[in-house]
Image (cartoon, rainbow, N blue to C red; front, side, top):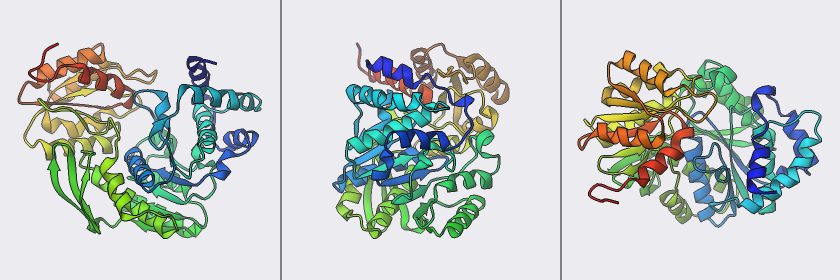
Length: 430
């Protein structure tokens, strides 16, 4: 089997035709010998910040000497990013071997698994083969009915920021969404929540009480941002001072603090995580595509924001780092998003918009998005055919005194990132 054949098989199944539930993935894992039973997990759910928090936790655990698996979604550059062990992506050969192992079991089920169920089962097999000491496991959607929730009680459950996203699947109130996220809390376990949203917090706290879960909420009084430097944010999270976090978004100190609190919770549960590993893990973490500064003059930021809460955080980050500067926004979104609500926070600093069509059957066309933005904001909005065209146009519109921020869809992150990095820096020529 070639890697192209392996990926074609993985992508041949569509989730839309299946009802949510854990029965299919349980049957699949049972046919594979239940590889998840031999693994320890940090299970992470939430609306925003899951990926960054997972990356920080995994970086700390790796720095502590643990062989650490990391399972995240979606990917930016290639599918292999979804399975990492000590930072290394799965290889082509390993991926092909996994598909050859999992496919007969999947094909034998009375109801075929969804793509994400299949990938989750493959991840469990991969991390078992790799003999991981612990796996940082990101929820795909929701929590209670997400395929990752097939695991037994994890070493720690973590709930990041709660906001309105995937309302069709999870509910249209913060309480309903929090209930779905709280589905990862297992009886007798321990959990950590970012907190800060009273309606959601009450639901999570009640779920923890009902299941006998030891729940801790992040103490924000221990967190202080000291400086915004070009390549890092200098922060304290008591008792750790002067941490140089290389993730630049204004929301990232909270994610890093949550990861540190997670490490300390694991330490209380018996995991050997020294202070030096916590500092080293935070200061060496990498998570591309999340408020990533691709170019300096003018500033060109790539952010993964794709819901109202994320877009608002991106806008706040831009205002904090470049106060008074106007930005040209390079945007593509999916048609099932509330575009007007989601993009409203951008208008205060907007100079213009350049729109793209994400590579997804659910995409809103660049032409339709440009018309909507122009009508609602009164600012110029121009559709572009390709990421390269969009990047070039956005930079021209930004000029030397503006900036560019690309956001709206993770599907566009890799092509935009590649196009921006391929251009010569200011003062250079090909």
